Structures are given as C-alpha cells and as structure tokens.
Image 1 (spheres, rainbow, N blue to C red):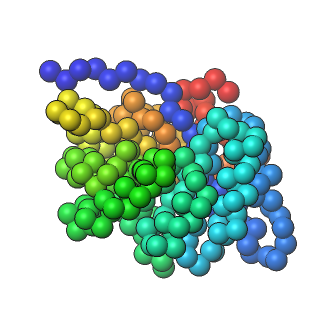
Image 2: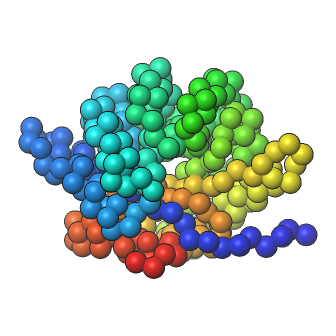
Length: 261
C-alpha cells in the first residue's frame, strides 16, 4: 500500500532571465536587474533563478556576482539557483558565485529555452563527476528530467540531490485527456522518486518543477505532486508582472502555491 503524501506549500524561485533579456535590447541600465530581483524577494519569493547562456543573450556573466551579493547581504534566507549546461566555463562560474543550488540542463547553446530532460543512460557518467565537484563546494545539485519513472534512480546514481520536472509537455496541453495523461506520468515519476527513500542506503529525491507554469496550471500540478518542494517560474510571471507589477505577480503565485501573501 502506498502511504499518503502530505501536502505542503511549494517554494517559489523567480527566473529573471526575461528581465535581463529586455535590458539587453538597448545599451541602457534599465530595467535594473538587481532592483527587480530585490522587489521580487521583498514580495515574498523564496529565491532567484538565472540561466547564463554562452552568448549572454539575457543573463550576463557579470550579473552573477551582483545577484549573489544581493541575496547574501539582504535576503540570506533566500535561495540562489543557477541553471545551465555543465561546460567547464559554466562549472567555474557556478563555483565562483556559490549559489545554494545548481540545476543542470541538457541544453545546446543555440536553444532558445530548455525543452527536454537528461538522457542519463548516455550522460550519467559525464554528470557524476560534475555533481561531485559541486557538492564538494556545498552546492546542491538538481537535474532537469522528463516525466519518466526510470529517471529518478538514474539521476540519483549520477549524483542528484533533487530532480526538476520539465513541465512543458504538461503545461502546453489543451485537451483535458492529454493533460491528465501528462499529470499521470508526472505522478508516477514522483512516486518513483519517493520510493528511493525506502531502499537501503538511498534517500528520497526532493522534487522541483519548471517550464511554462502559470497560476492556472499550478494547482493540478501540486495535486499530482503534493510534496513538490520548489518551482522555478520566469516567463509567465514576468508576463503577469507587465500588467500587475512584480510584487503583486509574486504574491499571486505565492497564494496558488499555498502561502499566505
């Protein structure tokens, strides 16, 4: 018999890539990335996520020390999460800026956004020493994964502390039956992650999620994963902020995630 899973509020990390992308359209210092990150955290968000790509088309490498200092000095309870593909340059950037969490994604440089999880059978041997290097520096390691019940155990073998569900296939469905099928895959994968804790010498993997999540599709996702630890949301929250402002947009997501805001 499967034991019931206790529901809990889910933490919100706001991805500020879209803010940086808008800033980079002109050679001007606005919108000010640090001011907006500060407003997001003051509104109650639990962390900031960035994805520095090799071409610096949104987050610049020079943004990372500024964001790290902001969180360390003004919001020490908040989390700094850096995501990206583990080139040597990326690894060194992460180690220099000491985030709380690194989320490794299998993106190629030309991709506009993340669109799939890791193939651990092909990449697990490459990922394990990377994870060990980060963990030796005190940085938590999360892997981007598809909804596949085989992946949590493979991610753990590759050194994962957490997994982050790529939720695009769920969030982009329009037909109710297709949406339910995707949620069932996610729920089955979440069950597989929890079962690792019942295995000798293993611990359950905590679960994050991200990609195309909105205030409309988050409730069903949280019902499928009642113990969802954290979501990383950028595009939809930024779009809402164009109408509402960042503080109110953040508070809106916090309420959906089970927090008083």
